Length: 315
Figure 1 (tube, one colour):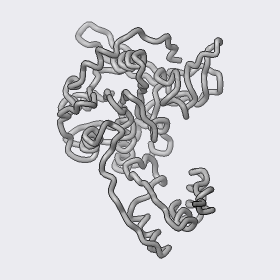
Figure 2: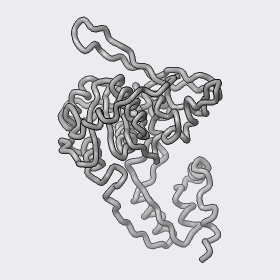
Figure 3: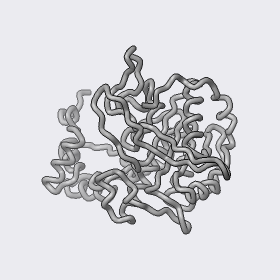
Figure 4: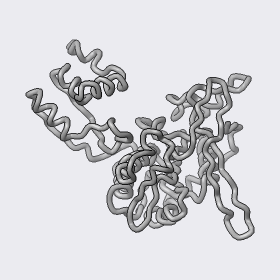
């Protein structure tokens, strides 16, 4: 059976579709429905992370009615990325509902780490053991744009208090993922370009964000919840002034909250087998002990993945 002619070029670049929609006052989905006899649209409203990028089920239904089409809405309520729906359901309750205790799952390893140094150590060990392992963070630190071949600046800086009295604080520093492939003089990849950050050699040495993690997955995930999202008085609070995303930082706090929750849901659901979480806000970190517990029921994986740290240049 030959494909419908319009299906071959159904989707121009997303940016072009959005620009056309803004100019005409239409929705992106309008052009899709007009071009093909049948459109199967997979939509997750909780993956909307910026204004003007969202489409809702109600809008799709309205477009179908205007076009004289029949609209059928089917719920896909299970996820198989994280070895089933138990973990993703826990994440949704944490972010959008009533946080629930993590009771454990035989095939999923969830835990809290005390600071980014511990998170980095885990990532290095899991990578040395042969797992794809990545760390992501909220866009709460500057992101210096670099030219191809230049060293990556350590834009992310997180102060970590001393473990007890008399111990000085330390500052954990890391680089965001690279826009372009970075190699050493011998041609060894130090940092893959952003599109390959989640899967290629060297990606574990940089921190990704929602834009490089969305739509991808890896075996072990490390997630740093930045100061733009905190827990207090029994609910989540947004702090857009702590964001470095120019399209979001000027939003009112209540409007920003929706995007912040969706933003963190993405990296929290990228790990197929394990996730470790750290919150930079001390009260939020303390709160997370209640639903997560001090260690994962599968804490043994932290030990079996131990191995020599790969020769890494975090820059």
